[in-house]
Image (cartoon, rainbow, N blue to C red; front, side, top):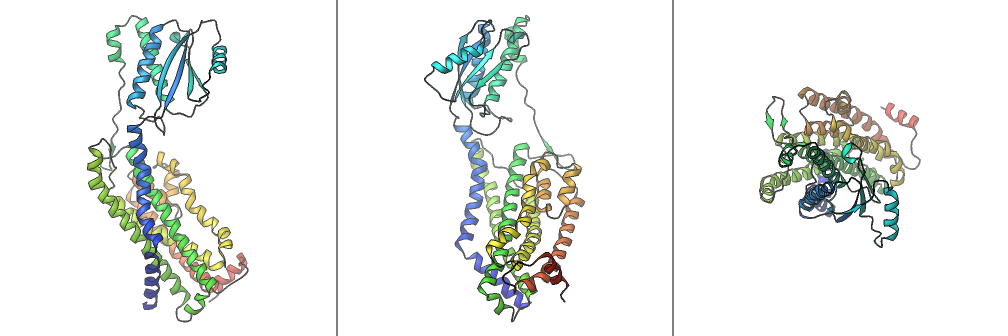
Length: 435
């Protein structure tokens, strides 16, 4: 045990004292915090540029254009682009009316206008209000650039204006139409397992879940690769041949896993304290400016640490096996791909699990030991999974870790002294049968 402790201490101190550890510990949370907060702050204080819209009006109702113009330009000026309009900054719409006879094809006007316009900017669009737009025909929007999600706001303005003009034509009181057509916002609340209302919401849950998932993914991948590269470096420098003269290979592997795991826990501990301080003090500062930082419950941080520890030991064991059976970084790039894909796959399907965390497929996937560190953590972040599912996922992971530790110990004690040609599957099987 004393020898294992020496290895743990050495692996821990060598990595904690590096500049890379200090830079990563400080910059990683700041970088992610900037990704979460900066777009929202910019969206509140800026616009995404000016978009000129030519309204080709064939409706015969001048009031329709005025209603659309009032709504569209007022929305873009106050930045009312929340509620699923998409990423990016809102555009400011500037609408001009062009009356076109009902019997003329709008496409011909668009061609002439495009050819004769010196401004070839893609930030110009055309809104077509056909002759029967107030009788049920569909308005149409054409532009070179359709990737601006702010167009959704223009669509809402056109829909509201057409509905208003239809009601006025039907004889409704114009003074009351605005009151009757005022949008109703749905108040969304989250309940816990007892049915009690708790803090949170769609956006806050997504921000917290994404942040935790990102850190867990990066941490497990980063420190797992640390283990693999550490084994390869020791093999290439032949240091391992001296070390195993006084330490058993299994002790060396366990010491390396625990030492690097403690480095990861240290970094996560610093991140957790930083998150708590930001939630306590930064939230007050930003709330006074109309912004919010989502709070992270302490129970969620505890689950995060538990799943990091289990996820690290599971994947670090696999990466230790990879490091033991290869002799160079080039070989490792090929052999590590299946292990890395086991970490990447949950990131590819996290949207499916987040949209329906209690479905059968989400439950089964979160119980798979290789996916549990990220997907079960994701489910805990956005919903209230039964405790038995959380405990079962941890027990399955522990059993998987013990199984792979046994396999890794068998391969590690032979592989760390092997150089040159990479062993085949049959040779790995023989290594497992060695006593």
